[in-house]
Amino acid sequence: MSEKVAVGLSGGVDSAAALFFLKQQGYQCVGVHFRLADLPEEEAEQQRKEAEKAAQNQDVPFYTADLRALFGRHVTDYFSREYLDGRTPNPCIVCNEKVRWNGLMEFGKQMGIRLVATGHYAKIVEQGGRYALAVPEDRKKDQTYFLYRLSQEQLSRTRFPLGNYKKQDVRMIAEKLGIQAAKKPDSQEICFLPDGDRSKWFCNNKEVKKGEILDDAGNVLGHHRGICYYTVGQRKGLGISGPEPLYVRAICKEENRLLVSGREQIYSMEANVYHTVWMAPEQEKLKGAARIRSGGPLIPCTAYREEEGYWKVLFLEPVWAVAPGQSMVFYQNNAVVFGGIIENARVSSD
Image (cartoon, rainbow, N blue to C red):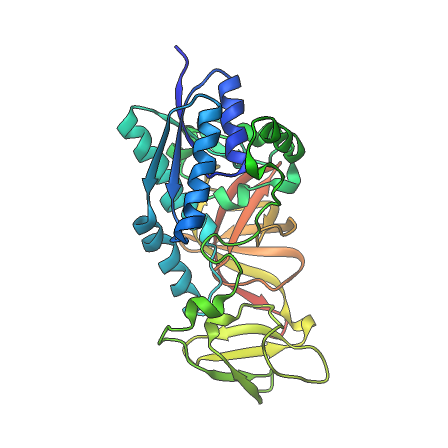
């Protein structure tokens, strides 16, 4: 008898195509749609209908679950707290780790299903009894950065059917299946902040306070609206001017200040990483390449173990705007070795 798999259906192109490929491979599929972000009812219902349509078109049982409370606790609360603390969060990474996979596995447990699957672009490789994420066939769609915090248990029970396909092939399949979103452009936005405007998100938060903007010499150049509206490397929205363009170099929560510098002073040659997750066995030192932000390039570097849970990463070339709070994911031979949260970085003017 073929194995059962619980397939997360978002209502988009990729998850519908993932369901199709899994059925082709002989799996018995059950579709489940999670309501995550607290979206307007009309928008949420449209997503649910698209997910249900994908399941119906492929004769697959369909279920729904409301995970808004879990999403709020682990994702939106974290998002707010990090920005209020002057850090730059990765809500999609936390959602995958704390909400989406936990939801799929709990659903599978209730249904007596061991395996789970999604429409992410990634591969899973096994070596020496351990599982690791690997870069997919379509490197432009590589989503391993967003998945690095998945545990060994989660990886061992996960299937990524889109890892071997190009996005253009996935769209063709979706069109044949009659998926309404087949030609819809890929979203680059945070699901609960569709226009990317944090002003609306924080407008009624009493912790947001104006503060000073200082240059490298300690001169006050102006005032900011609240540190939650800024990230390292940001230029837009500072409301200041000078002989050269100025960018956020550091965010100081305790003093409620922004420190700004010229572009050349925002580059870093090293960073400290903590709260790591390992896919390979831990090592004292390793060479490879790291990604410090979603969609960013792979940067050659060497990582050294410091105290327990902390790693120093030395870049082989200057890196622009390394932001505390963001994730750094380390790769060797097109596979994820480990990842963690950036605690701080040493910039040129330090």
